[in-house]
Image 1 (cartoon, rainbow, N blue to C red):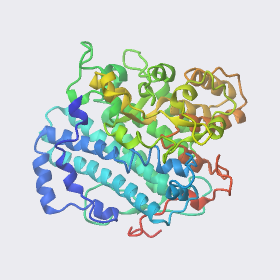
Image 2 (tube, rainbow, N blue to C red):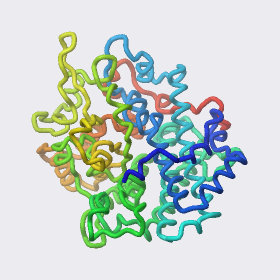
Image 3 (tube, one colour):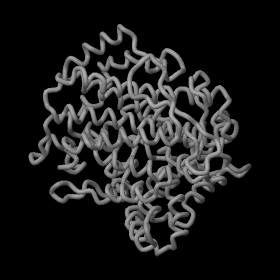
Length: 494
């Protein structure tokens, strides 16, 4: 387990040093780098290291280690309160002011590191074609290729959700670059529909490869988290364990559900989400269950047991521990907390009870402090694997999202209410039947409650074209607010 997440020795990052602000620069490979690449990919472990470097890159504070989880995208969704006078630059993001140096710096860093991660994945893919015989086991070779394609699809999906046009009733067209190779030549830009088609092609290609080699089709996620200690779990390579922490077959199905819903294809979103909800191993075991109650009772605040895909980030304490507080940090006022859980009994709701903590009074006021990424004292948890699997998890795709997609796309109220009751039971909340319009409204509320500090609410608002965001009272949100500008040096014709 330690080898999987150890950041030392991954010299592959030297191949893609940021030389400028254009994504074509980020994909530039110099002759010396190519020599290093040839040497790296001459061995099976080199491929493994190069693939893991992609995940390390995704853990960056500019990506899912902070900005795309609990800061930048959450400010755009109007989340978080600040003490008076603090975090003035973050406040400008709540008004969608993308022209400040703070916004431009962060946008450039997000854009650059997404494409840098894609370049890393493309390097793996290109070298599989030329050096793939270095990987002796065919199933391992297929798995590495599939994961690299999946990483490319995932990063391009978030590029679309951040920088692309609104998916419904768009009047502002945006072209985006889709990078499928490492090159110092300009990357072609694609219109909205063509860009989406390329993402789905990558998803389908990766799933096709994983059908023949992914252990998660044979074992549950929990079994693969413990494959080293379970005699009945056999994998072709130790690199094929811990599947919820790497792109896997069901993560791609979940990504498909997310993307279908985003573009408004509810029929296919429903199919994909239900495929994940009802997914079983070849022996008939469910691959995973909603785990909110059990996880939160054990202080696993990100619900890692229901993650279809997560990152294990050993820097999460450094990235988050000093951020969620009243003094110079980010928090929720009691008023906003009550609005977040309006209509629900917070005395039983395990998220309200466990994910949020009553902090001490400050200036005569109470506030709520987020616990989601809080880490226990190392001396209290002697098992290092427990830290990596349960406490350090940053969710990217969770089963709860599949339930919300299935509820939103259900064919009738009976189907939607059955899913809703199962989902809410895992949150320790008993609910009555609702009408379809009521359920649609509750789904939006649940995205706020469930994925607070996971970076999903802005995309929910964007796909629905919401004009009145909760906690933005000064004006309506307009179309251009939902479209982050490309870095100024980009070569496209937008």
